[in-house]
Image 1 (cartoon, rainbow, N blue to C red):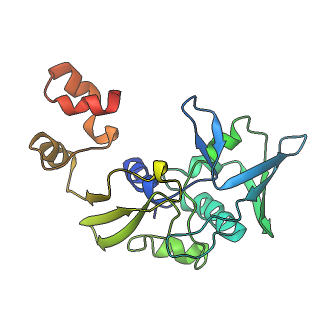
Image 2: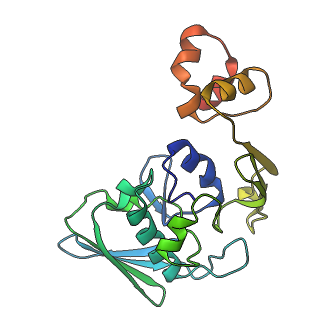
Length: 220
């Protein structure tokens, strides 16, 4: 579960399965994603987020404000790798297609923090935390899960988007879970995988030793 995992590389890998309320553009300024409008109170403590009506999960279910409220509450309670993004949230509620988030103190970059995955709200926060080990929730991202072998592999397939220019040109992605960093690096060096998380690869080591040219992928 991307909201519960304490592994930052895992959240990066799983991010292609999920959309967030906002996404960071090339200039690192937040742009609307699942949220289509935001109103901020004069004191900077209350954010009213209007959720896009047309957003749907891979299962075909409509994404609702309840899903967003659940995702924020779950992230706040989980203590996961991304939970610092909502550490100043003191309350969250929803009505219609609007989510209201209340902060305990103003956060000047709070909208930039709303870049975490939004998941389906099935079950309570407590049940989601208790089932974190074997539960991969539904998402709305550009890839959807087609097969999952616990602690071994995830197979993802690109979603056919209405705007074909935005459909990923890589149709299928296989994510393998390995024992440790050394095994992951060995897989890359021996051509058994195409990409590693930069948290695993540690680009500086490759640049210093000029071991492998795949590091150029991260510099383009």
